[in-house]
Length: 406
Image 1: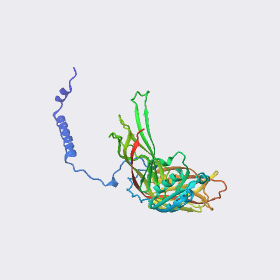
Image 2 (image 1 turned 180 degrees about the vertical axis):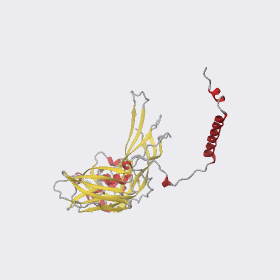
Image 3 (image 1 turned 60 degrees about the horizontal axis):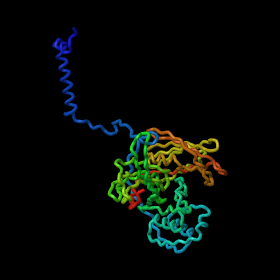
Image 4 (image 1 turned 30 degrees about the vertical axis):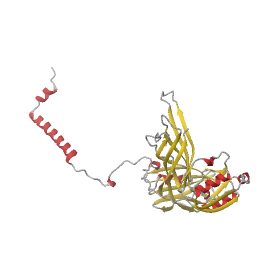
């Protein structure tokens, strides 16, 4: 009959039992020393291998949080305009505010019978602009302009027959926040057999004065307070991920605020207080002259190494190759690779920026910008880049009151 494990141990030689006992006591002693007695060793930061945070540009580690910036404050206007045409009024407002007015050729003809009056003494730019739009019966078109262009500081005007400029608006320093609409959506998912879901969404638009060099604007504001007139809290249990976006260098972006729809909603949103975030920078121009023959032209901007590798012909256009290394934020890289470069001929006429491709590593990244020729344009003469540095984040608080619940 086979023996049991206990019988095997009792039958083992004494020397073997002694060795096993010593090994057990050694392991127990080491465990006590490691857990209770040992003084932890502090390693230098540069000696520790850590996993790179995710979310960087092309595999590069994410940059640390940006420093908090300060709103430079609104442009203050002093104007006295009495019973003049909208065209003349907008021209004077544009001159005082450093703004370019873009419009259709027939806009002034459509509103030629209107007259407007403005009496401004150290008044902020956005309230004056909205007042003039309402008097003139026009609204602005939020088109996207490439950042280096002079027309970046521009507003496209068009007739406003539907009253878009009558939407609720909050002025906050150099910014304006417009509430476009509130949506209540009810969803019954029969396939998943889930209970009906109710979503309450506010669509808003944030406008920065065009003088502010904007890189990105947060898609999702941070909600401080949201309550209806019955006292129900509308703040979601978990905040949404605060994404950033918008074409780099533009002064506006559409934002979305998602609220909790209460089981027994009241008739109005009594108060909504939130904060949007805007990433700004100091923009430094960089020009590469004689771009057809220039090779390996190196520049250093705030520690960022930018090397123009050269311009090559590709069918009906050209490819500009650059290599960048040194400290940089993914927002800077995104700004550089999306529309912040201009290829121009000797007369300053621009090639069309038709695309990019890029690759990155922990040491830097390279990218190629493609340009196609416009009709009648000459050979490329120079490449102009707008390089962002000294990035910071500005908070924009805003509050809406007494909004009808859909």
